[in-house]
Structures are given as C-alpha cells and as structure tokens.
Amino acid sequence: MAQLETPTRIDTLSDRLADLAVFGANVQPGQLVSITSYVGKEMLTRKITRAAYERGAKFVDVLYFDQWLKRERIARADEDTLDYVPPWMTERLYHLSDEHAARISLSGPHAPHALEGLDPARAGRDLLPYLPETGEVVNRMTTSWCIVPVPTPPWAELVYPDVSRAWRDVGKAYERLWEDVAHICRLDEDDPATAWIERSTALKANAQRLTDRRFDALRLHGPGTDLTIGLFQSAHWAAGDLETVDGRRHSPNLPTEEVFSTPDPERVDGHVSATMPLELSGSIIENIRVEFEGGRAVKIDADSGADALRSVAARDEGASRLGEIALVDGEGRIGPLGRVFYDTLIDENAASHIALGGGYEHPVDDPVDKARVNQSVVHVDFMIGSPELAVDGITLDGDTVPVLRDGAWQI
View 1 (cartoon, one colour):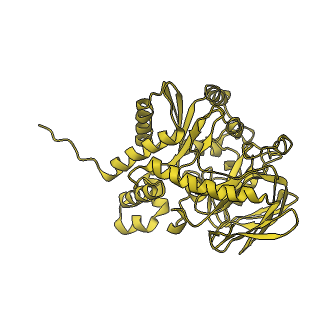
View 2 (tube, rainbow, N blue to C red):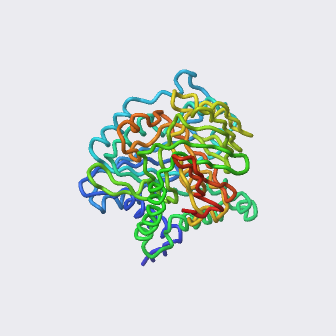
View 3 (cartoon, rainbow, N blue to C red):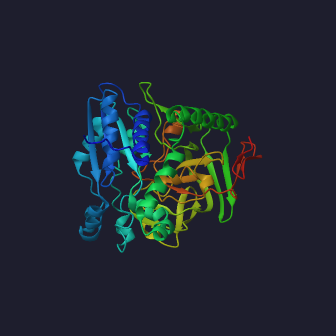
C-alpha cells in the first residue's frame, strides 16, 4: 500500500499563503476572481484557485505573464508599438471591475535576468502586466484586491547569491526566501489573518495621528535627500485594509507596513536619493537620484538603469510628478531584516517611499482637491527611507514638527 508523502515545509507555507491571499482579497460566494500570475508561480496560483473556490467563487480567471516573452518584444518589436496594450486586456479589467470582482496578484520576479543586455529605455516603454487603466479601476474602489509575494528559485538566487554559491544549490536559497516571506507575511502566526487585522489596527492609529495634525507639507531630509512635499488639506492618511464602495473590507497589499497619502502634485521641491535598488519592469535601477522643481521631476540620474526610469517618467504629462507619499516606521518585520528583495511590494514596506505617476483619489475628501490629484498611466514607487531619514511636518503657520526620527514616531 503506497504511503502518503509528508507535506514539506514549503507545502505548508504555500497553503497558508494561498489562504492569506484569498482572505486579503475577501473573496465572496458567487464572486468572479481574477488572478494575475507568472510562469514559475503555478503551484501558488493553483492553491489560490482552490482556496477561492472553497470560499464559493463563481469562476476564477487566471492570466499568466512571462518575462522571457517580454524580452522578445522589447528586443524585436517596432519602437512605436512597445506601449501598445491589446483592447481585450483592458476590456477584461473593466468587466471584472463592473462585476465587483476580487483580484489577486502574485508579485516577485520569476526571471530577474530576462531583460539583461537590452536597451533600458525600450524596456521602460512596456509596463505590462500593469495596465494603463489600473489606476482608474483602483480609484473606482469597486473591486477588492490583494497582492502577495510568491517565491521562485531565480528570485531566491537574486536575493541570496552567497547562499546559492556556498551550497552549490539554489534550493537552499529558495527555502530561505520562503522562510523570509513566511516571516514578513506573518504566516508563522497561529492565525495570519488575525495577525494582519491587529497590525492594520496599529497602522491605522498611526495614520489617524498624522491626519489629525493636518500638516501643510512634509520635509524629508537625510543623506542625499532634502525634499519638501506639499499636502492637500482635505487628504487623510490611509493604512492597512480598505473598503470598496459596497462595503467590502480587503487588504490590497500583504505585507503592508506603510501609512500613505496623496500629495499635491504641484508642490514638490528639492532632491531625493533612493536608499534601495528598484526593480522596474525587469530592469534593476541602482542609486536613483531625482531633483524636483514646482512638483515636476526635472532631473533623473542613477548609477545604472536610469534610462528605464526616465522613459517611464516621460510616459505622459503626470508621470514626472508625485502620486504618493508613504511613511514606514521601524516596527514592521521587513526593515529590520536589512535585505533588498528586488520586489516593490516587499521593499516599499521596508522603507518610506514616494511614487512617480498616478495618485490615489480615495485619501482625498474635498472634490476640488480630488480633481487636482495627479493623473498618469504609470505609478512607480521607489524607496527613500532609512533610519537616517528625518521627517518633519510643516504646519499652515510654518512651524516645524518632528514626525519620524530613527524610524520612530514622534507624534
């Protein structure tokens, strides 16, 4: 009689991550569920599909992407076609939005070296799987969604090259990445969903204290950075889970350690230096430096990959302005690891960050301010925070109030 195999540690963690993703998206009985995945993440995609059907999903629609196919397009397609998106992809997105569906995305590079040797400016033109209309759908708040990180061996080798070399086996690095993802996603808790509800409550309390101060602007200053960001008086700070227009709570990002708001896109001045590399559509950009005048990024430099970011920032009128400011304290689980994961979902929750491109409308309450939220088809976060970064609030009277020091809240 054949014996059943004992589940491995990765099997157990992947089951828990699948359940967490479905919890985060708050999948409801009879609901359509859209999953965006990558080649190499099939195991988790199937487990999330199973978990969604177990919660009563009507149909699970899965769309896979492959960076190696993207390489062929960037290398060989005509220049004027690189930002083309097939209409059926947009129709698919809008249809699911109209149906008030749930959406789950799997993050983390599955082929981090696929675009090596290609022109980064061309690579910056093709932003798929991010669709230009995604920001508009997010602003509608009709769908509940969740993004979770899903390890792959190539991603693990990128994060832990020394482990791969020492053991001559990428499998050890893969196991280590799973353990880190388990830690930062709180899969090691008895009930990860409850753990995230508790963390969300703490983050919301931080956000409320910021909202209550109604600062006119924030000044961020530290090594390589002195940046002043104007704020809308009607904007609040958001954190943790959100609510759709029909009242469904959901956790858009798991993990999440940030409090964020939508800045005034015309009042950003100074210079800023990234504190972590940025993985952008298959390109890795090192040591980003940006200068702002009157809200616009007037100069973008980097030690490598600058053309990819410049290409994105030139995509449309709003691409060179800010759409988000997010603050991250030292109480989360990611920053203390001191590691770069080359996945924006994780890295942006390790350090304070800003985003070029489209802004979120839901944190802005006044219709006049809402009409001035930055509009763009792109939204690119890059990390500027560290224990050395100081954040001050500037009041309407011009007074300066410490907000963050050494990663600790001062308000």
